[in-house]
Image 1 (cartoon, rainbow, N blue to C red):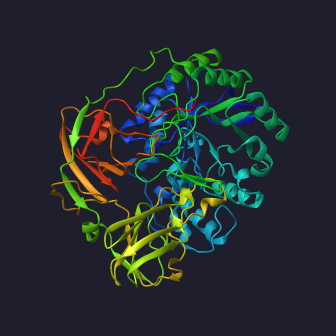
Image 2 (image 1 turned 60 degrees about the horizontal axis):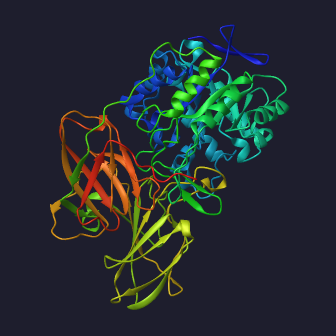
Image 3 (image 1 turned 90 degrees about the horizontal axis):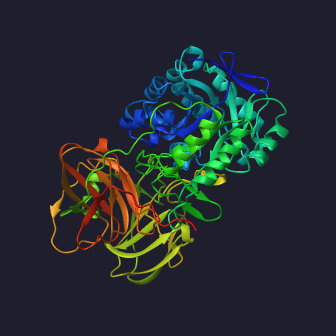
Length: 583
């Protein structure tokens, strides 16, 4: 593949003028069987490059474990991009933001009480060095200087919005070079943060979603020489639970793109195809109030969550064609979908009856955080004995992020970090009653100083002002549901309960799981974790990739934390429901 170079105020590719027209496509948010399809549609829209982050927390889930297989086979994704004739902008972090759990930083870093992330903290640097030493060798052969598709590599990510530490950025840049990265390096920041986030000798780029002239002028004022590029041209946005589905008018977004391209600058659309934060991988924001992000990362992108071209796709294709050639091939058409069907879930397995099959117990004097338990995602169950009977006030200082409180298995209340809730009144029927606190990690904070976000009960628990001690802690990552024992249950079981049913497919195709009447929980199909649902909205369906299905019988499991509808059924429909949009 040709090699990218910086020649004065322009990019060149093997000596010829070159403009990067790129789009974000996160391999880890797309089923691997769909990678080739999404890359093909990127080229047909007129993109010559795709951009991807790399999620450290998935690739290195434990300090001694490193993965580059299956859905995390980054080299395979890069090879598919090359086969499609696309270049790649690689953004390996270590921090990526991306509305991704913890900004991609692995939770095990937070097992060290005093660690300072994204800094010159020796413990953090040692972990980063180890990560790059494992990640980069398989990537080096995919650099353009070795015939691969990767034409440039980013140093950190929007560092100027977090700190002002040139020594840290210099360390990361030197580390990339030491590991063999010999293509151009770049940083990206919002215009106001360029002074804090850039590095001498490394190309600075800007992030914005409108007013291209002003954004590029700020970049030029900061960096008098070098190519102009917007690394994150925000053409949509993400959604949070309890908000509205964010959309952007396609015509207005296309006009903004036209304005940017008319300056001669390079661009990376954020996002071209957002995909899905499957499982427990969504992040959260905390600007004085904790706000978790929804499962869908549709992002109102040109290619929607299921890979379908949108009105914005066609509008952008027309704009790009004004500035650079687009393939002389028809734009992609719609893909097959499953026919609508209702699926009953007649079998049940109460969570409290299933605990031995889901995780072991660790005793402690005080509640242990998920990080202390070596747990990344999911739930943790903290239990202790109540010393007295009768009404009492339970105070939990650190609920991260949503706690369901039970006394002898009976619901006593819910406390939500998002609502700054810390106390609930309960009644113990007897001295010696069991207090159970089921805490959900709803997503570690992915932006700002709140990234030091430990999960579970992070502070003391007090009953009538006196601290409770003598706890057991049970990790519930729910990564393996194979040990659950399901039975047919009469009546109306209340949560937390797993519900299971089967449905038959003749020919696998994409679908969306709709959960009318369900309250809050998670969905798995054939063991693949689709993600979270919540009646709070705005998202009201979960994307089901066709490759998850198989001809014949398929199994769906729903963990409902509260109460399932009387029908105990879900609907498979060919279209999504991402909720009401902003006015």
